[in-house]
Image (cartoon, rainbow, N blue to C red; front, side, top):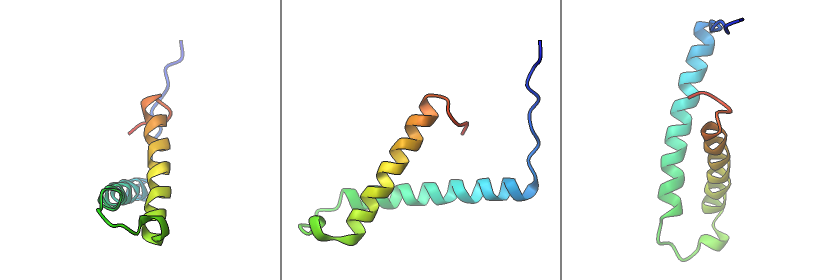
Length: 72
């Protein structure tokens, strides 16, 4: 009967977590805007291709969260 004790995080770890959450939020917004743009040059657009890579990473993270892999 051992209950997991919540681990304390340092103020620096909390700040890092907050910054990462803000980064993910802003990145997600950017990716959605780029992905839904009506540009005819997406095939050879470096910005569009990077946004697509980021979108794939965000999708993986969301899938992990849904499976309970990481709290959030």
